[in-house]
Image (cartoon, rainbow over all chains, first blue to last red; front, side, top):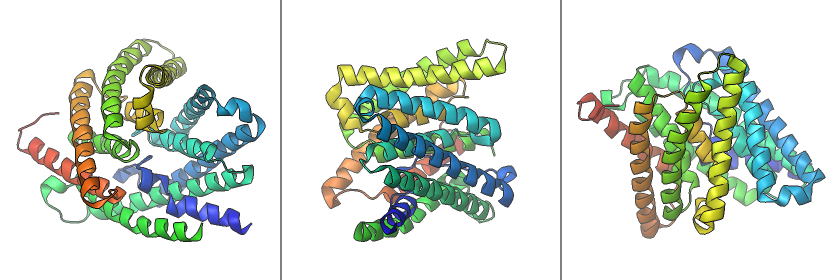
Length: 183
Length: 166
């Protein structure tokens, strides 16, 4: 149990897919930035990543020989990302930057390839989802603050957003080191 | 948000994972050329799918076409250039799909301009990363975010001064 919690923590903080891998980055425009909306999207993202990881772990446990072939892995991940893309686009405004589907794709990829047991993979998927949801919340907060801050004109919107994310990445670097010590 | 700002965001969102997850310069060369080719093929596929009347069919065929392009590119690279594909890393199809989905709704003109900027930025970024790794060991991911931010600032300044147009 302790080990599963540790894997959850490492996936959420130490190897956060958004800040460490740069997948699933998202800018929340002012109209999308209501607390309720951001929370709903983050929870939806978490559930979708957990579902993708569960599917990936299940396939890994049930059909290890098929799963080992490169074609099978790629086909499954592409099919999964297609379904998730359709589901996400139907419910939320993921269509804007199309980030959610690829994040889920990466989560399934990582969860499926790491050679963990079933429960460890599910725990990793839940942690990766929680980390991604937290990252989306942080990005919404950052974009809110940046809109009201005074910066030079050539740094407005995208450049300053990426610079702020770079500084936030350094914070997550601390957790990365911590997770290496624990796990 | 202005159209140029949105394009800069999209460029950054495509550039950061490509810089972070493609580990070697050879992989970056392969990825940039495959990305540019896939961008134009996807434009053709999406234009054909766009002629359909039923929205679900249109979306379904468009998304299936994108997935087929990514799977095809991955399989072709695995078959023809196994060493280069290995150097591009296991995230190769994921980053390719990321880029294609991000620029999906743009026009052909924007795609051709932004594709060129993307390819040069990716190659230049990898040269800088390789240089940095020679001097002080592996480069921290935070540096990639900061570097992308400063690159976008330069690009935005050029757009404001009308030296470039997107």
